[in-house]
Image 1: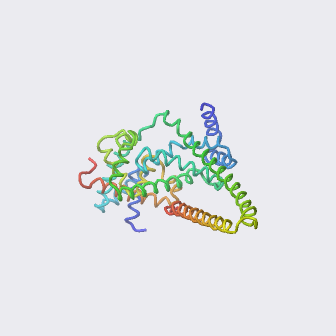
Image 2 (image 1 turned 90 degrees about the vertical axis):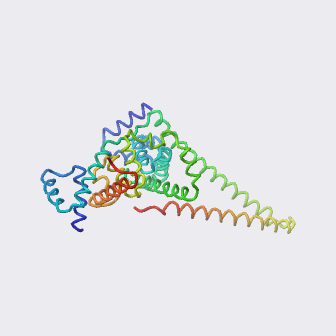
Image 3 (image 1 turned 120 degrees about the horizontal axis):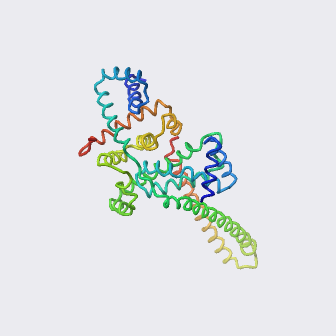
Amino acid sequence: MSDKDKLAREVSRYVDGLMSSAEEREFLQLIERDSELKAELAAQRKLKEVTDGMNLVQLPDKIWDGYWKGIYRQIERGAGWLFLSAGLIILLSFGAFHFTSDFLLNPEEPLIARLGMGVGALGIIILLVSIARERYFARRHERYEEVER
Amino acid sequence: MDTLVAELVQATVKRPAADQDAGLLAECARGKTRAFHLLVEKYKRRAYYVALGLVGSHDDAWDLSQEAFIRVWKGRRRFDPARPFWPWFYAVLANLCKNCLRDREVRVRHAEEVRSREEGRRTALGNPEAILHETETQKRVWDGIQKLPFKFREIIILRHFQDMCYEDIAQQLGIPEGSVMSRLFHARKKLREILEGPEQGVR
């Protein structure tokens, strides 16, 4: 680490008032030799004075009352969607099984109808898989793209 | 609500913060929404104000902090009780804020009219005028903070508005304490440069 970097760190400690009196004296002596850093120190102290006087407006308690409700509603809906999806998957699997065994593989049904239905069902499956895959990759991409830590 | 507050006070008084959170998260992992409610009550204000500092608008800060809690709920079984809760939560929240800012930039870049609509949509609380009890100088500083690159804005918000010590910031951001000091120096320097730009300046 260069001396300049070390001094930069010390500037932060000084501005934030984290130095002992002895450290302060030593630091101020050191910084006398660097006019650029000395000017920076003065500017940062001024900035700190301004930010010390800044306070975020506190939201009224009435507004906070709705915070948990908003979260709970979304959790509840998430669970609802999960159960609904699971139910639909079970029903669709059941339907697909009967459709295949009772219709597609039933020699008593006309071949042309079985062929048409079979090809149509295959098309629907391909479309659903394609959409599901696209959404899965979009979700993964969005979730991890910006993660740095 | 009173019972909840009493439970929260009881949990807070008896055990150290890390233990309370680990205990609550263990309950959450078993699907107890009551424990999660306590956790939300404990951290909601901090989460909201950090998000407000990072994205600069009430509506977005409100939604993003709630979304972060929902993601924590969904990932509650992956939480390691040996580690403190807040840094984990903060990583989730900061990423959401980052994504929000990125999306906002894209929107602004592609359609100026979308921007004006967004501004029109802001509530009185979303208006920067209402975010701070401020003088003209403080308002300029707040606007300047919103123009900083994310990693600089983040450290300024944590140090100045969350009043966190270097050690806690280092833990939260997963960087050494020395890096906190130098990042803070460069963040303040950058902020000063922004403020000294055309028609700016801390007086």
